[in-house]
Length: 234
Length: 234
Image 1: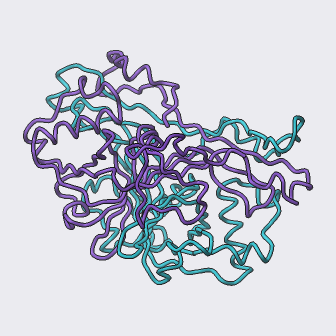
Image 2 (image 1 turned 45 degrees about the vertical axis):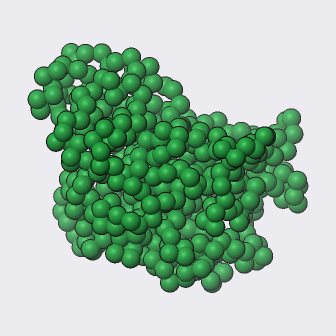
């Protein structure tokens, strides 16, 4: 049973996530981790988060892209997006999840999911300085497609002004990870002799698809894009 | 440019999602859909949602498994989970997202993601009747692994009592879909002649991994599990 053993072997203050009332693991504590490296790895492995905000008293959960530089998570939206600008001082929760497989146990009750998940809490700070905004958008673009910031045209002043970029500190975060086989391999249900195990889920990049607007003989995709085909995406 | 044309060709009241203040598409309206069939398809293609709740005034977004029977979305948790039981009358937002690829445009500003996403709002109803709870757990288990409810041992009374099952109506839902190429193929940036297009993201099931507790000669995985290997998972 290899359920979650990501706790840092030598806890150091700067590599251990601080516990708060929100990030303390109450249930399934064995799936919780205070390892800062685990947080970094989960964020590095993805580019889409689920952003939770409160709008007019209602909770709203929206998928959006993010970038992380190790201390700050950046996410953006049009300045017209009321979810991001209606409550400038409101707390948000950003969750990044990678689903790694189904845990198929002997009993329906013990079924579960292998996953890696990070939850980050805080009040995002609007980034208004053009230089910082450009750096944040670079971080976000590179998170999606490393190498793309130097390949694509960068934002001009008008585009920068039309983009609301928010910066969220990674200081208050919670990590949960589950790996490995089902938990009922040594229980009474094991005597039934039925198959149990994990059905893995793989996320991979496909081959680049040229924009039809490039015509019938499009240029080759740049190496930093083409080289990702058939590689794991999370 | 094939950006989102999922609107039902013949709108019928029961196949069209009702607009509310929360589900009305304000931004990127071309990505919004009121097609009930689009909602059903997005829910059918997944098994993990992001559940947004308000706990002690803070928003919290948690990944969890779900099942949908076409009118109701079921999700569960231990009865010890304070997020689910602390606010029995509180509204939630459940979001299901499939990420289909990166949209790599000529300009960083036009970059985006191809995705299918559904957001469902409402006050979940705790399912207390054992018969309904069993049906809901069957729905949830079958959503994860079709055929598994008849293969695994079903929940006994003690397990039913230890499971908090919640039912959320699909009545108030919002769908957003983006497909196709970048949007700047006919703009001034196209003159640069650089590659642009989509890098697809594929999610597939892997080969079943037997629980090591089954020993060195484990039984074969049942057909309903083994047959999923190498098939798309979303």
